[in-house]
Length: 166
Image 1: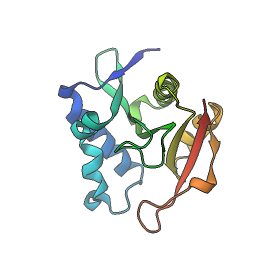
Image 2: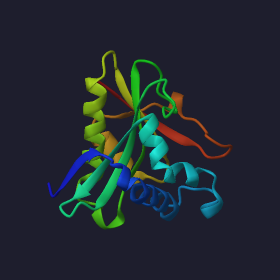
Image 3: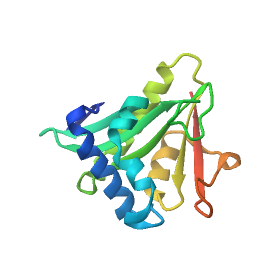
């Protein structure tokens, strides 16, 4: 593996925020493009790092090539996770780093974090229907679809959900 996973550092907040925002924009995951209110949330890594755990994948030169937000259930950054669960969100991989296992390594780190939490029975996530390559990673890692938990953060923007029993 030519990269490592670790906690984001304050001097990297802006870089990860930019990568996260641009990834969502370029992958067509924001409904209103640059005007989408969610873009500011995606870019606010400092807030995420204060209120949850933010992890980054960095290459040999220290450049950020991916990131993810990990949150125990029933905390501010958990959209669907309840007590006894954990959730990851905002998983991104820089376009130039795709296909190198970065996304899977970030997910595996979240699985490890969830397993380390006392009383945590499952790890859950929400994903856009367009993210087919991510769905393949989740399924290969043992996540299963949980259609009964699918939801719409805003009208007509349906998100699929997956869960991994720990």
